[in-house]
Length: 289
Image (cartoon, rainbow, N blue to C red; front, side, top):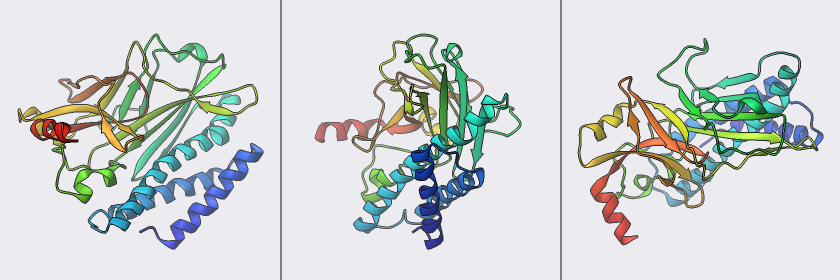
């Protein structure tokens, strides 16, 4: 489990974040660096618990895993308020990126009239060149409505490994509808945020879009299971935090390009992935549950 140092560092960072949120005061970059390092270290520590069969350990690990995902979002919010706002206001960069072994985090800002149809990329290399490890979101050209804010923030997170793996059926049973290993595939999310007249930022709810959002993932070795096996389907999925499981509702069947890029079209924003689904077992489970 996470070390006492990681827990202490997490508490210190959380305290600084809470003070900053209350007083609307920027958080120093070194504190944000500490927070991202803590989240990455805890993710690594959780991986060591994956072989446990103890139900108490499993429940505790699941709780910590969900907190990690929420922590990454909270760090992203602090990055926007502390680093993005100040730099963009002075003519500086409108993009801030943090990279760890566990996840990449990127925050950017666009003026209201340039949000529709915009492209957001997270992961990849630092030099701006394309990379097989990056995930890209392309917003639709219509269908998104906003509250009149002058600008919109884009908050994207790319996890190198599935942070929800501790909820997989294979973690505490021998039955699974998935043909992949439940861990080693990327999970990417995108949130949009805007500021109200009081200066408070809020997430923009994006769902049931008439024109979908296009998400492109790098091709994973495990996807060959679906392309070479008629009993396995490659599917675009999103994490449903209401039931703690993956769902394909609102997402299209993936398209694999000649460049080995996998494209998904989805009508909302959340955490997304591409997975290998066992056809027979999936149909069987749906009839008994």
